[in-house]
Amino acid sequence: MGGKEDKKVEGRVCQCEIPLNLQVDKMYEKIAEYLSGLEKEDCVEDGVYEERLKKCSACDRLAGGLTCMECGCFVLVRAKKKRLHCPRVGGAEW
Image 1 (cartoon, rainbow, N blue to C red):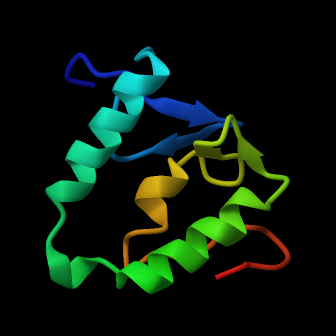
Image 2 (cartoon, one colour):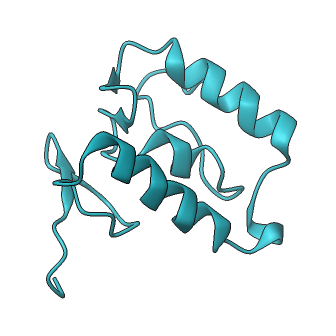
């Protein structure tokens, strides 16, 4: 896929095209860069974002502090997007 690696978690793939093989500090930089490119109308307000991240951080399906094991997405990205919801099977948190 265009030289970029897919983020696969239990058969699921993140669509934000951030390579998995980055060091953690570079990963956070790339996620911040990606988030800064999102249209404001596509994003939840900061308070909603913080609440979503708080719920994600307490979830047993969070891997490495970054990845949702339900969908394979980076939680910092998924929680910011207004059109997305918590993918937890059997009980979405937000």
